[in-house]
Image (cartoon, rainbow, N blue to C red; front, side, top):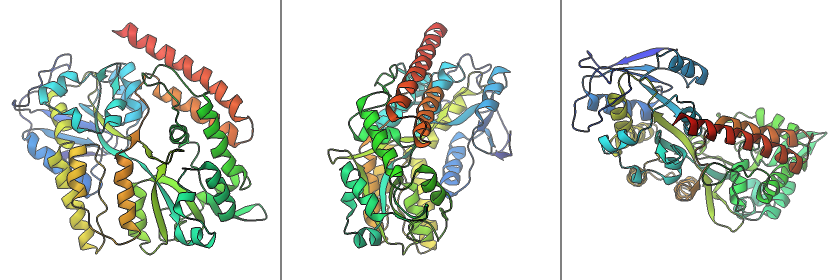
Length: 447
């Protein structure tokens, strides 16, 4: 199951037995062993929080199983009765895991440990709450920003407002002005609408949603979804097709100093906020411009994604697992992480651009620790926090994976020119709704 990293000293006490029952109490001492799957202490932000949390847990032997979560491996471990005590998963996996009976409800954990879910980003909490029951403790928040090459914009007589999504016709026109192609090879991508992944963002920006608020009804064939896909796919068609754009996109030195903004091979795109820090780190002189992504009414919007802590069914130490989830997402842990990142950035002579934690109280404190990098980076940080205040997300549902597959398969068929947006989304609607109906039925039967 990957490399195990042992943290802390001798184990004392016991956990929660078979995991069938648990006694969560914020005043109680926890002990035993805590194996954690899917999380690695790979940078100073993770290490600082792990150090803080292990110190809070005291006599708990923590075993971090390095590497991203392998769902099949995890489900097999649960099925054979040998799961880890704690798992770190994407929030869009929580609903399916809960419906499979692979993770425990956490309402008692939240109450017993006194976890204030009101302090967390509402969209993040919604993503870990299935049918009114909490199954995960959210952390981190990823939001999208509009990122653009300011020199390319200026040369084309454009501004950031022309590419932030507030006017889709303006984005289409800007794409045509910014793009460069020679013999079928795209040398400069005008605008990258980031399909298939960002379809839900564009639907939400147009006033719709691909899924109903209660997570029971697919809305993939709605007019808002058809309009969003038609426009976003058309952006690629105007540049010679998705494959031509993707070829140029894939050839970019994405994480290096020759990235597409520094090299002048991309006009604009929406991208998660962590890329702001990457760009500032590797190409601080790149000619950048930033804004939030905007709705068609001109308002800021972002589609929240992130991770969550969940306790597997059969966990032998749910009490320690719950305590870990609380402490790792606490203001104190995030403060320690921010201080570590700030020190590292100052040592390198670079600005600290902030961390989006998923905890609104911690976010506000960390925002006050941000250091100036001058323009355009300060504007990027401002846009990041504005986006974080205007998030939407998909509600949790028992068919997360199947729904996502149906949606992205439909987008890919359109991008490949095999189907129209209307036909592709109509097929996706049927398969996604069937998966949702079956998932909700199984969930009801399991109660």
